[in-house]
Image (cartoon, one colour):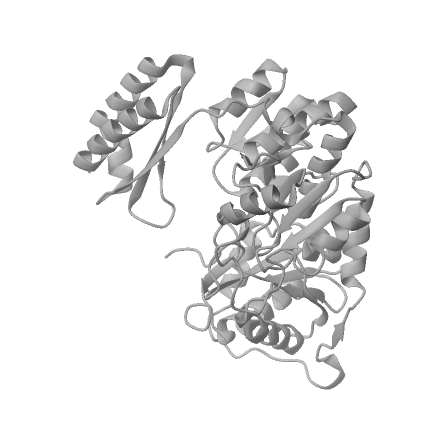
Length: 445
């Protein structure tokens, strides 16, 4: 039976897969598990959401579930996911609940839980919570023991103050276009960047509950590229629906991805003596160009499976100070317990100011190799990956590429698919090798 929790909480089509009943049961179970772990006091939970319409319904259900289990709720409204993680620690709460499906389309929604201190819940605790969703009639508190709800209007200001404290330089002289994806950052991103000294143009910052991620934000960068050129901006910043991601566009309209952002921040931290163990943590999907650039500058790259939770685990285990994903999740554990798109953008723009260099010049440290990804439908993904013909094909391709490219086979975590990824010096070479291996994977299954 598959786990209820994925790598980023519980997600599904709102009111079909992710129902109010499930949201209420899930939040109530979380409060009871916390109480059973011996808190010694009444649990307190911070609850926030992104602007999608179903969030209103699910916020009500989550609040009802928590209070019915005896937990008090601090309702902070529409704020980014990293804001909820920060506020759990800021308010010394026991639990954080973020209602968002991040970059997913509007009809989807999700529930992400944070432990005390704003860290992701361990798998074992998530499984314990899921185990309580069995429909048993549990004793419920009554009278004064029922949880209470308090709105916290100052929550956004406290989060913004935290971001500014983490920004090392004034952004005076920076003209930035920020694409808020009609999402959770719409109400605060422009103000944060203005408070840091930047001249700000905000686009896609008018959420109506239905337009989140709609042809804008991190997953649709063309409107931002156009806006940067139209406004003569120094830089463009793109967030996703819950603003835990950041991608960028330079003054010429070229995209700067998560790999390049991590390289820029890593070298800045090396200069300041802040890159712990001279190590950057990223996933297996990061471009080989990042690895080569970091090797040239003496930075060790440690890789993890795909998913920001695995990057966070490695950062914590190694006490490292920087990690992230090509998709724009960047983690700076000194300042945040999760990926924070606004924090990343502030640090990136501050580097431009301190180095007195354009984003294009800074990003040029990474020469991205052409990367081709082919999804192959198979009957048995485990059998396909282990097939001798597939193994032989990979060995041949790796010998052909040498140090100029690489091959990665990754079974999908949710579907009978094998993802074939090839990087090579040219797009044509990457495509030829990827198609050759994909054909062998398809026949081997």
